[in-house]
Amino acid sequence: MNARGRLISSPRLAMSQDDAFRRINDSLAFDWRLAPYDVAQSLAHAKMLAACGIISAGDRDALHRALEQVAQEVSDGSFVFADGDEDVHMAIERRVSELAGEAGGRLHTARSRNDQVATDLALFTRDAALGAEAAAIDLAQTLLDLARAHADWPMPGYTHLQRAQPVYLGHHLLAYAWMLLRDARRFRAVLTATAALPLGAGALAGVNFATDRELLASELGFAEVSENSIDAVSNRDFVLDHLAAAATCATHLSRLGAELVLWSSEEFGFCELSDAWASGSSIMPQKKNPDAAELLRAKAPRISARLAAMHGVLHGLPLTYNKDMQEDKEHLFDAVDTLALMLAAAQGMLQTISFRRERLAAAASDELLAATDIADYLVGKGLAFRSAHHVVGGLVRLASASGRTLSQLAAAELREASPLIDPREFQALLGDGAWLESKVSRGGTGSAALREQLAHAQAAIERARAGA
Image 1 (tube, rainbow, N blue to C red):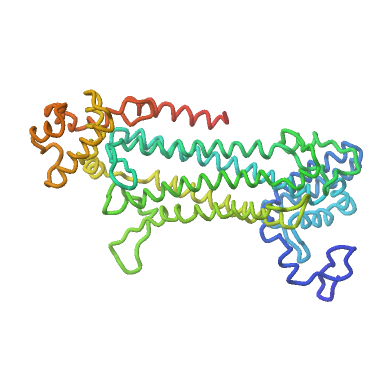
Image 2 (cartoon, rainbow, N blue to C red):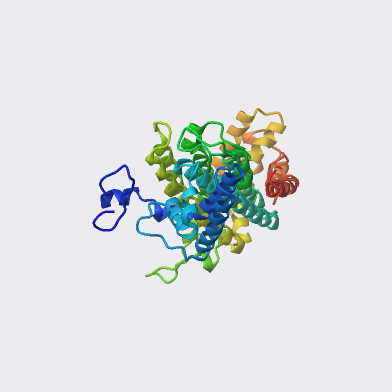
């Protein structure tokens, strides 16, 4: 113990740790979140040690009583971290020893902090993946419900943020539902990445006791045990997998947020966010700012940066465990928290959003959006598509230059552009709803295809909820 009352970190070291080193080395400020997992792991470990005859049944019972007390203290917030606690694992072991006496010193038999930390982190990541998967599926359902309610609301579809072709609002919203269902599958895949139990690998080479790792795996919900002790303690692939899934999901949410910002502006006027998801201005009393949607955009690169940083931690890192790997937790924890908040915000906004049918319909009624349909009409008359594209481009240029719509072009002008154009058929093409219902391919925006897509999306959500 040094002059200020702090324990020397190891019997191997004659000098106490410098305060600056302690601050950079200690992880308790963030890894306390692993406490429930560390207790669960320790309960299983003590049970296994006794089952293998490595500790007595009495020691097992004493350890279990102590660990159950620690679990209660962690749950109700009464657990007290001591000044000398370097991390949550040492804090729990210290408290167990206070409660269990000599038996507490036997808890760490046949394990190392290396396999202990890897196991706790795998358990945390598994829960985080399940939570993110469920939230993504719930948001997909909300989008599907909105799509069903707005299945016949025309709106312009965009490329390059320019009006391109009309679609139904329900079709547009379903695009995000499918994104989120892919996200859910990515989070489900993280469960496979966390399927192998690290505990029992020891520091890196295994342990000097005939342990029952299969019993541990069963107790802790792992499907199998790691086959290589070196890989077990150095593996953080599951962290990378979860961060990658989170980064992709956050990117999807950022695109949703960006559209909500655009659509809620007066220039678009396609929707209005609830006051509960907007902010006012400190100086301009008329303002209603879509801050929550804007933050969906801004927080996405934060998660992507956590993924890049974690790759940086592991890049070129020699086997097996290195203290660099302590940096995995803050990247993972922040990404998990940030994505959970983003999913909750997106859910709240979409559950309370209101769309403006008249503004959407007015924007979708721009006759220039029928240009591709007119080109396809000429293709049906036998003209090559590239030639048809040229003809329609000339008609659009003529109408725009003269300040007219396509339907205001004279019959002679249409025939001059192409003798294949029948003026009456041309006008019928521009009729209300014709452009939308001409899209008959599967996955398109036409009503029949959209009804089919709604059914497929609901079935996909039900499969995702079932874990299929």
